[in-house]
Length: 459
Image (cartoon, rainbow, N blue to C red; front, side, top):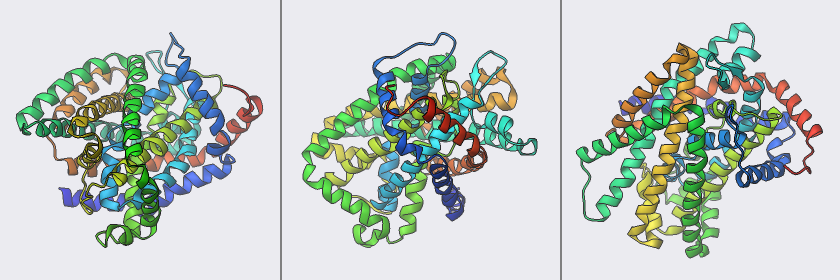
C-alpha cells in the first residue's frame, strides 16, 4: 500500500502540479499588483488590532475568529513534524522552496479569503457559509459546477487524513517520546486509550458548531503559537552563532542538495517537490480549505478578510516553519537524510539545548496545535459534507471523525503522511482553476479596497 501511495504521490506532486500551484500564485501576484507586499503593512496592523481588541458577533463569526479557525487548521503538526520531515527527505533546501510557496501562497490565500466572502451564502440553518464550492457555483458557468462536487468530496476525504489522522498520529508520537524519556515504553494499548480520550474531547467541541470552534480556536491557537515561538527563540539564542550557517545551507541545498547533505541527497527536484508539498501541507494555500473558515466572517469589504489570509500564511510558513527549520539546523543533532524523521528530529533539537524536560512543553504545544487542527478541519469536512448531503449530516460526520481519531492513534505514520499529501494535491486543482477564473473579480475587489481603504489608514 505504501509503495502504491508513493507512486500516486509522485504523480500528483509532479511538475504539472508544481507549475499549477506556483503559476497561479505568480499570476495572481501580477494581477493584484503583488497584494501580498503592497497590502502587508495594513494586514499586519489589522491583525494586531484584532488580536488586542477582540470583538464579538452574536449572529456569526468575527473576522479574527475566522482567522483563528483557519490558523487552527494550518498551524498544526505540519509546522513541527512536517518541517522536520521535509529537511530529512529533501535536505535543508526544501525550506527555501517552502518560502517560495509561502510568498506566493500569501496572495493565493488573500484571493481565497476575499472571494469566499464575496460569494458567501446563507444555508438552510441560517448560517453564513463560503468556500470553493460556493465560489464555483456562483462564479463559474453551470457546465463547470461539477467541480464543486469533486472539491467537496476531496474535502470530506482530506478531513479524515490531513485534518485528523496525521494530527492525532503526531500527538501520540510526541506523548510517547515523553513517556520513553522517563523510562516508560510505547504500547498499542496506551495509544488506543489516548486516541479514545482525544476522540471524546474532539466530539464534544465539534458538536458545538462553527461558532464554538471559532471561540475555542481564538483561545487555543495564540497560546500554543506563543509557547512554541518562545521556546524556539530560546534555542536560537543559545545557538545564535550557527544561524548564518543554517541560512547558507538552506540556500545552497535548494539548488545543490549533495553539497549540503554529503551526497546522501543529490536531487534538486526532490528538494523542490518535498518543499512545495510540505509547504502546501502546512499553510494550505491553494487548497481552498481556509476559505471555508474565512467565508463565514462578517466584514465591511471582502478584501478586508483577504488581509487575514495574507497574515495566515505569513505566520504559518514564514514565522513558525522557519523557526522550526532553524532550530533543527542550528542544534547540531544528526539528521538522518533519506528518512522521514518527523517529530523525533524536532524533539531532539529542542532537547539539545533545554534537556529532556522540554519534551513536556513541546508535547503540550503539539497537542494544542493538533486539537486545533482537527477542530478546524472538522469544520471544513462538515461543510463539505453538508454541501453534498444537506445540513443534517453534521452530527453523523462528527461521529465518523471520532472513530478516525481512534484509528489515527494506531496507524502507520508514513502511510498517513503519504495519503494526506496526495489528497492535498488533488484538492488544489479545482480550487486553483477557480481562483484563476475569478481573477477579474479579485482585481476589482482589490482595487476597490485600495481606493476606499488607503494603505496608510489605521486598521
